[in-house]
Amino acid sequence: MEPAYPAGGTILGPDEIEGLIPTHITTRGELDRWEQDNINEALGWLERRRPKDILNEPFLKLLHKKMFGRVWKWAGQFRRTEKNIGVPWYRIPIDLKQLFDDAGYWIDKGTFSEDETAVRFHHRLVAIHLFANGNGRHGRLAADLLLENVLGGRAFTWGRAQLARPGCDRQQYIAALAAADRGEYAALIEFARS
Image 1 (cartoon, rainbow, N blue to C red):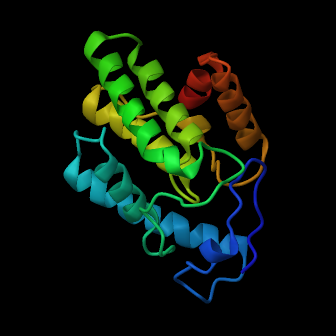
Image 2: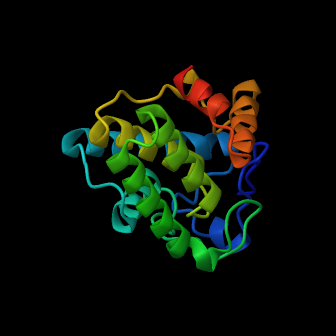
């Protein structure tokens, strides 16, 4: 399979593409369907558990594995290659630990509103780019878990869009992430709640 990448999407290397478990997949549409089915299973798993201890590496790896483990052999494993986005792969554990420390501080001190805390957490996860692929979906779900299970808020709607696919909603989301790169979070908060 040679996937078609949406604008701003992470490009997989040949070794990562070889990690595709269902070998009959030949189109991006089929891949999207398999990934969404796997994510739906993960949502069921989360509904039964409602985890509160999410600010740690083992949980985020497990979450990614639950979301993509029936589709990709490397699901739940930090990437070991450079991508078009993200920190150098060897810095992932260091930057992630800093994010956990920062998020814990934000929560303990009430530094930001619940929504801004969750959006900042999401933005940093995406910026670090833990995995070969699925980082946006993983980061959005992790932010929702932080909101619902830790902060006591309600999950974001994320524009009520399928952001893995190309389109205006994805462009708006990527533009909001770019603004957050500059320290401007209002557009990302607004998008997350739209």
